[in-house]
Image 1 (cartoon, helix red, strand yellow):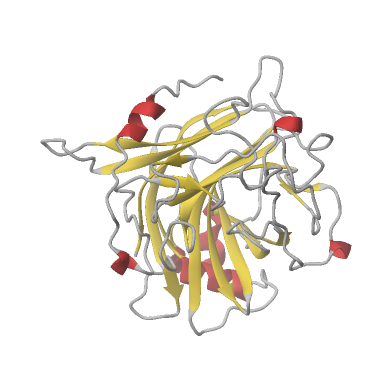
Image 2: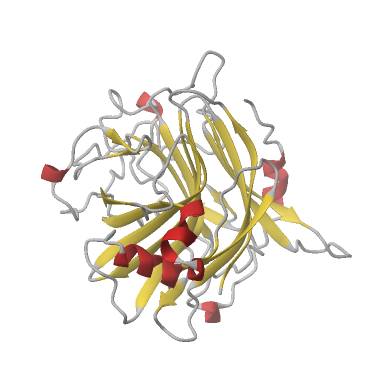
Length: 370
């Protein structure tokens, strides 16, 4: 399915270069997506090029001995601690809405698995593949993923946008099958400490600090069905305790993918991410769950987290990350139990991830930390 993205240039022209109040530490810098500025992960615009090879850390959280080489849960690859490549001839693909060196922005991740393999042999985009989390262009060929923000004007005299809507599009549909049959494209944006957010986005177990996220999500397009097709719209939060990043990933919309049930809270997986200049470094201890099963497994305290079942309908969310992380911890879905002392929330992100001959277009708006 081809999507007219001609509005991107217009929408970017409306991005306002207004400084953000730094007193909003422990919240999103851009509460409500009022400014709509964004940028990709790496601070260097040449990361992963021959002049600036990808920097890999000296170690990963988890040993190679526990990893295999198969796809698990249909979408996510199990990879050990990759050692290369460090140069990606298809990149780099830096991307921003506003000056690249702006101090406050939403961070955009554009990753295509297998992202750390020999890119001329195993990587789905071949010699076009860029560095991990910057795997492909978001503006030109290969036309696999697109991200842009659109200004919304509700009040007269329309001098400034009331807010922006973030659009995440993964389009892997071809004329005779998927354009990149082996690709697992993952496109995300979010508020992240040290990547456009000037501080943690929240704190768990600290009175008066935000630990909830509210927003609205809409699936505008979801095409492609049948064997081998996987489609998801995701929200995930990154917290830290015991010196290790912990992540909860919740599927809000999913086709041909189940992480949980009314009696099974979710699954536990390990993830290594050795690109040391990426905010995901060095990986995470992850709990995966589906939106529709949170209340039955964790109680109503997790908030309002409906599964998206209708295209074009706007779904309203409020997630209490303190209760969600506590539940996943109590269910044994992390390596170590979550403490009752302060747990920083480093980031909250929304994503589209797919596999096969399919297109998914998700829209996110009104994102606040509470």
